[in-house]
Length: 217
Image (cartoon, rainbow, N blue to C red):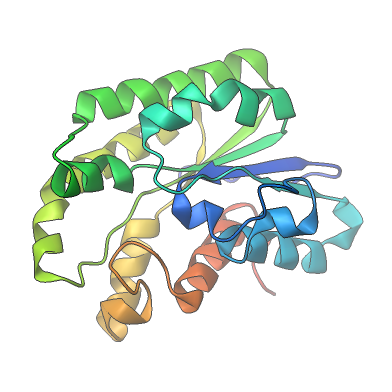
């Protein structure tokens, strides 16, 4: 992790990205507890609230399944800036890789960086928000997914570099999941190689909380 982004009293925390963040959230009640979903975003909110109730934190989930960086950029004003969060957490990138292989619509690494950088620049220009960037990750389960690494790995490096440039906290999710899979099996943590199992969501939530100084004591 490049820096630590400690949560502060009254923080309004936005978690956003694709289906890994979305994960069952009620879009009809986005600002209610049901709007957090039952993946890592909901676990983060639950454990942060339990560990530090004195902080009075508010959590928002605006992940949308299937989103690429371009799609996240297109909705950034309404689904991020207009919410005026004080902490912004982003996990995006695996669909930029996936669409190359399942529909033949690739996003170059240069385009990926352009969209991602535009999101961060807009956030820094308009908000005084601290940033948490989560690496996209992949645990190949099907043999075909091993070939995806050549497309995803450069995107992971983009996220790492951007985190350093903007002083964001980096959650090194790809390495985290790889280490976990080495102890057991990929399917234990991501049932299809991309989407985490309940244990995988728990692993990611704990890593996020550790990054912001709320690790279990």
